Image (cartoon, rainbow, N blue to C red; front, side, top):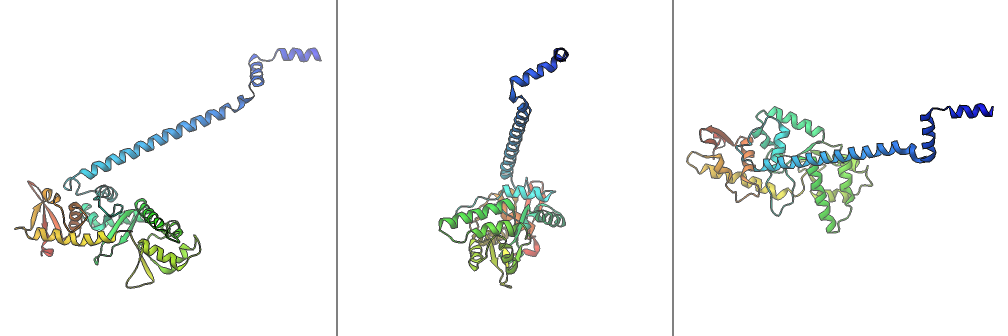
Length: 310
């Protein structure tokens, strides 16, 4: 039997003998495939990160190019989201006021000719939490649109400022972002619903609501004090300038002989009463119907609409 066993061992296939020797020499050889898999994953992750960085850089370049375009070059669009991104890129830099870009609904009406399409696409973007829509306290039917990421960034700035002033109960902002904004997509909310959603984060006190009001993320409705509007922090001074800028622009055009002016030179003028630039106001007043544009061989002319003639 011993001789038969020896003979069988000696007749074993060479490759089997080689594998046996290798496994005896290198106990860790069985783990090498997993190392290779990990290395491939690392390489794939690195490639994905590089692609994401390239996409972000391309988006930044596109926004930079958009910001430099004149209003005549970027007045109309066929898609609401494209128009929103363009106007976000063109939002003016405002000194002494820390605020993220927002777009007025009227501005979209000036750029996407089908208003029903604008309303439909805004509703879809709102329901998927891509953006928030805010009722503005201007005394008119004004609504501001802000991308959700910009709004969250705006809230973070508020929290940081309040932390520097040793504010208390600031944890309510985190509850607000996680439990309220993620579930309540409408522009308003009742006191009862607000407290109920905030309680998912912790025990709600009266001061928590006061902190949200002082931070500017909600404002109490005048008609019904048990209801709040969601709000954009730090927007108050800009709303004052928005109203005054509208009046100044309409007054400027009304003083001209035909109550009109070529768009290109008009866009370059500066408004004294508003921190917002001329392009922002022109889009707004064209969309609201106060102004209209007329094509001429020399370019677009901006004219006061007859029904709004001062």
